[in-house]
Image (tube, rainbow, N blue to C red; front, top):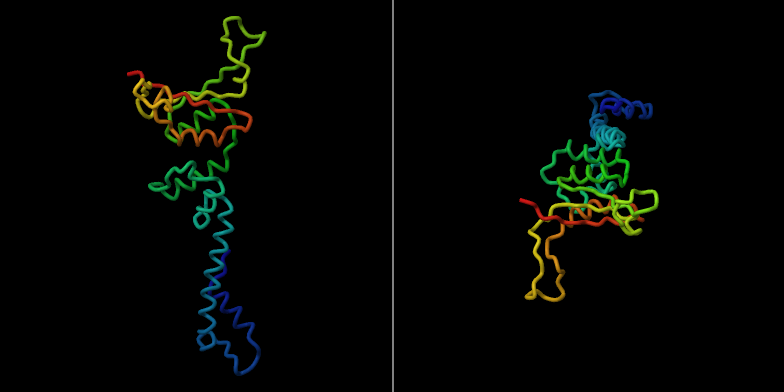
Length: 200
């Protein structure tokens, strides 16, 4: 419970020494001088109680930017503008409650919440217990996760008129999506992003 200005003032007056020089009445000049300091003490007390409440990110107001910085928000240069205080608090709370994973559903959900459409596929390597019709993927695929996503710009194949230092297939990479999902990738895994043309 926050201590009020009147409580601080009464405590300060009671701490004064005994004697005629120290007027203890609430309407005296000494009480008016002490009241100014007591207002500041009451304000600091309210702020201290608010900070104790902000231990939980969902209730943060003063420390919201600190919580966002701690959790690395906004991720990969995403903008905060346009988000209400409640949305920002909810985003920080989701980040605190989040349990990392490299499962297909988790990565697809992360991308979906960020506004991207992806399809996550694992091409596991072949071994003797698999069906004979299973494709012969290489052993290195055990450490790869393939992310299929629509290309941001039309896919264009290089021609003989293009510079020899250019890639054979030209398209704009979705750096924001790549940055976002690479933050969740375990160190031993490689995310392979495959950009598909929209089939219209």
